Image (cartoon, rainbow, N blue to C red; front, top):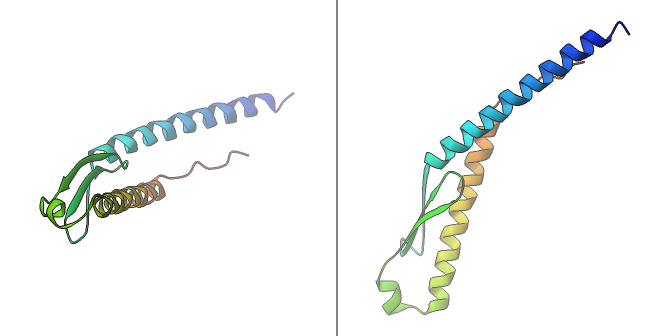
Length: 107
C-alpha cells in the first residue's frame, strides 16, 4: 500500500482546509451580525432595522399610521419592511460568500 501515506496527507490537508473554511464562515457570521440594514415601507411609515443575518433589531412605526389606517394595513407595511430587510440580508450573505475561496480538490 505505497499510496497510503499520500492518501493520509491528502485527508489531513482536506481536514485543515475544512477547519479553515469553518473558521472563515464563523468570522463571516460575526461580521454580518455587526452590519446594519435599514428598510422602510409605506413611504417611511414603517421602518425596520435588521442585522446582516436578517435578525430584526427594531421596528419603528409612524404614529400617523394609527390615525389614518387600519390594523391590516399596518400589518402589511410591517410584513413588507421585514421581508425587504431579510432579502437584503440574504443578498449580503451571498455577496460575502462569493468572496470566500472554495477549497481546491485534492486528487
